[in-house]
Image 1: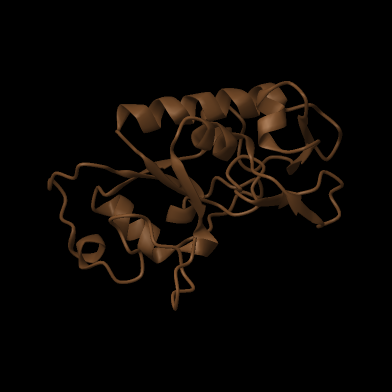
Image 2: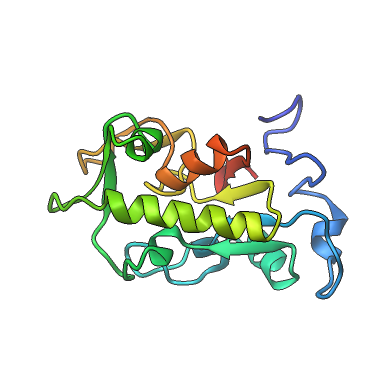
Length: 180
């Protein structure tokens, strides 16, 4: 988490705020570890509302080969735009364990799609040797630490999204875009 005097998250070996390796990384250069990132953070329009959530530093990392972009919902076959979803129950870990549900606003159960997307995301992370991930805050797939409470009222609760929970369960370090 944030260190003394530093309000932003420092991923071991990569200070997202000031590491010249992040800014000067060139395509074709070898990196031991790539970082998994939410595809919407590259500006790609894959969010539930059909928009991107551009983070210029994340986009630059993807453009230079330092990061691997994924959208768990699209990997599971969900379209964009799509109906908003929230997690009912204790969070993404509960959905993975069959004790919670990812629901669309209409009440349609999307748990199977969210779990499938998380599993495909983990497979991609493993294929690329990703040990770290920067994911979209509060997302029912990608959020870490806080997600919407399942009431579609804008209220937050403690917990993580389905993909974030699976990645953390398997030892991948997860932070949100708001922490870098």
